[in-house]
Length: 288
Image (cartoon, rainbow, N blue to C red):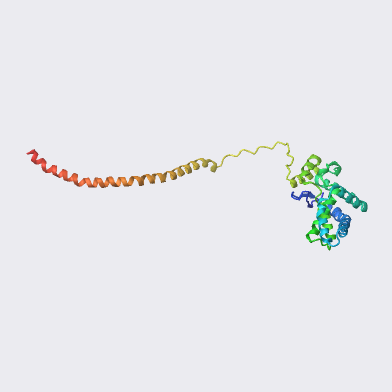
């Protein structure tokens, strides 16, 4: 399998694109031929719609044509089936080419060379009738964007055919397709394909049951031995830093009291000295 990759966007426009190996080969083999075969049939259908609009209302044919283009999105199942029968009757190779492309797309995605669209449920991919309907809707939207101008209708039809061909797989079913149809990982080529699909779709890869050896025990380094003491020193520093504001506030509260006590002592000292001096003068008289 070659290593080139490309993007196939699934049916849901809001979903993430799915990367398929070798999509460049698939595009060269199917996308261009499908545009060549189906594009003219879509143009014929659009021109028939315009002629019908002119017959319905000759004096407001542009508005009627625009209305008919808007109603393509709401075609019922019978009308879609009739258009599919008309196209496949006019160009029988379209149906064969479409399902051949779908089968090869599934083979590239899963790595399983035996899978075909018949192995899948119908909800996993677009039927040919639904694909033709989506091409009609895409083409009509492009024409409505230019106010019904059909000058480049051939380019619009070709782009719609090629774009919608890349959306035929439902992206929410990709995981189920891989889980059910991807080959067993025992085969080397199939395992490589499954691993590539897993990485693209963000699917968990198959885990090996081989025991993984435990890593060797490593002696603690000098830094790891110092870490406990360093942590304790840091905790002591943080504790001291937390205590410092409290101690400063307590000292600031005690300082006025201490100053008042010193002032009182300084005021009492003259009185005490005078009392001592008075007692010292009276003592000789008392002894005599």
